[in-house]
Image 1 (cartoon, helix red, strand yellow):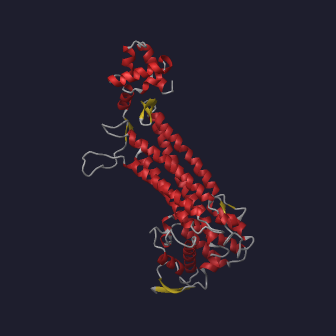
Image 2: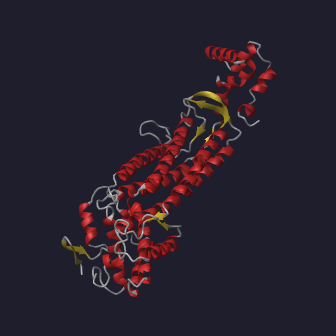
Image 3: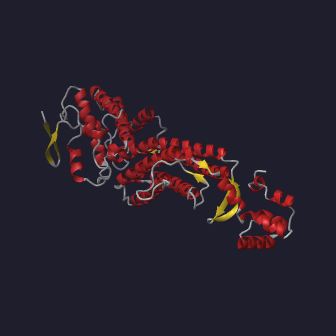
Length: 463
């Protein structure tokens, strides 16, 4: 049998018998060809959908709403999906009309057909187990989809948190390695006062390290779910005990501390937790981009720029200029950050577009959140493994910059006064001399006094 015929309210449709999805999924495939990215591109979402359906089947069996043989087949199908072997059958475009109905039906149909084969039936023989009546019992897209999305973001976020932690540790390791390397600090791209290269990298680590806690906090907001609210939060077509049972099963399956929202009508249309999480992703993106900017500046050259550090050479940099090596890893991180920042705006606009008891723009919100998490996780790993761990300090260049800098005059202000120090700086700049040379020529300080005041560790604040 090469094909099967399925029916819905629109009419009949012939489907290849090789596919596990059904007629409503195929209609979504025909209707929505937008991003070219199927929901199966986000395995965390598919796993989460299967977990929600498994929890629902367990609750429905417990309540006597689903016969044991059907419940067992659905649960077994959901477990197979969680193993990842059916991700390629979740084919609807991530961007879709219908507030996620196509995603929910893709899950319902794949689960139903897998379950049917486990019962010894053929695909599409829905009289024995139906995608809507059985797999979707006591459910609506409007509580299943956001619940699965909340879980998926938490699962994907766990990987991002680990990637941020590893990157932070690598930066901290470099901070310790470079702690003895004196260099010039800069404000507004102008010489400021001395510091150590280790202090600079420690600041990177500190700034980035705070993002782990922010991501964890944002994840906690996603634990409040509207499962059991069905269409608009009133729980229509759901058993009164279903929500508590389904959520209890989902907590056990997912190992996440989920709980039911106190106001299911509000929770069904409120996108606040998604907006907050998106803002945290944007915050992380901004910090990663700033660090990448600094790495590109500090490694500029190699002979005519700052050249205080050398980034690992990972690929040739030019098709015309021999020997050129570009800071391609930080550049890719910058571009990732720009995309995440732009995605945050899309999430914000989509969340604002909710109307009355539902937000039909949830697919765009979920797509952008999952895509941003995926990109940031990859970017953090890439920056960590392909760049930070291999950075080398150009110690002599750093020291020469300090010795030739006008900025060290700041350390003399407490003794010489601001006006005298300014005059010394102007003369040193005009005559291309060092601060020490001018101070000694003017007999303002002795060599010993000068050495004490311009002691590197003293100027770096680590004396």
